Image (cartoon, rainbow, N blue to C red; front, side):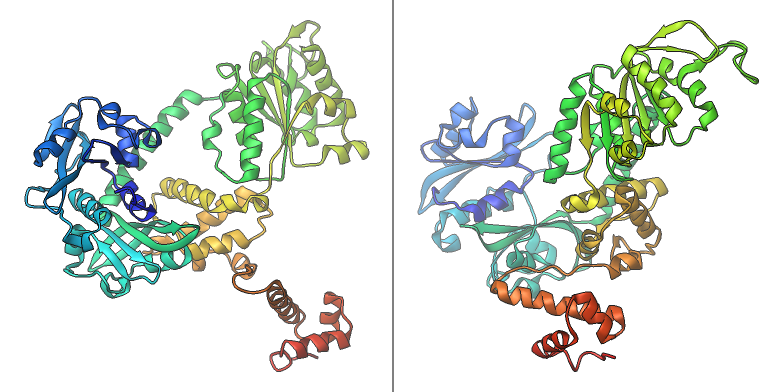
Length: 578
């Protein structure tokens, strides 16, 4: 039992029920992820300790002493099944599998199941694993690095109507499976649609890694019937819509509706800017948020306000590029009765007064008129303002967050932005990375946007193919997340009876711009460089329509140099140079 390897842990940890295994001395050998959560214990600290230290009053020791089985016992909030593990007629350990009452399914009867060394070549680890996966009725299959089945649960055998699959290649037994590909590539697959024997299922597949090498893979069926998943998905969607309705009703004007939970991304650059934003939220200094259009500047402004001590106070947004210059001052600072033709009799508060005690977002600050910049500077410095047409000084306590997609330094050099105002705003500076700088986030962002748009339009979609994700990752995204959202919305609108977004649903410019990826693999660097050079020459030839003079010019080569490389890579016959 001490030699249970990663192979078994991957399977056991993927099971939804809690699993605990002890040896005949009562020492804990296995605790899976579900058991950790349900018992609120730490597996790393528990393994190697007596079961009574980890779970006081546990009955698992009595099962070992008596060699019996306890089926579906109700204990407080759990339904528990316990079974002794027997080898050569002797009890060598005990197994406990349990579920929470509100979520539990009836565990199958183990009374006629005896785990002995005659099963699975006498390997005790195999015995334990078989007992666990068959007890919880999970559809699990394990393959080696060549795709050969080494283990399959009884539930999976029943599902595909196959009695003895071990030793066969998985594709000969399970229709449309990709677990052998995971065993080869080492890349995980989650939420994959799989149709087998007329069943539309959702599966997850994970590689088995030992000493840094992939030695096999595990496939687990998460939903045996796609219709059950759709029902659950619809229920969750309805709950989200209800939540959004009440959230928006409570928000209204003058409230920030987004928090840091709404910001998606786990790449290094995303984590870095998120860490700084959270720190900025805890202080009361002015903030300047810069970044390209569509990178989420407003989202960060909302989140900073909601995480600050001003979160219960107003959050007011002003688009400095959308207000006409002649109305800017009255909108910002308000006006008194009779200040100008058409003014309200009672006067009107400006945005700064509405934001008193809270936060004001000056969006597109680079578009603010020069004559207003000096007045804004005074409000920021003195924390006071005077309404248009008035004489009374009004004190205001407002935190300023400014955002822009322009270079304020360049505007200062061009005489279009005040340097003193810039330094008042640039106390804490958040520079948001563009989408092309955090390619690792594209898959997560795409799926979040897919779910958001699907819910908005009532269109059911189940995912985005890995090939489509590759195309999305290869694109440059000048419009950043806003452009990505438009692309995903377009793709969803083009779904016709299909459940998954594929390359054919993406715009042609994204397909056309896919960049080929190169990896060293088993090759030398020289070989990879030559492959890259060959591909670039071919791309350039296609771009110039075969014009040898233009091709050589773009590549920075002489005509002789170009022909030399064409000969070297045997490209003469493949090209039609003019």
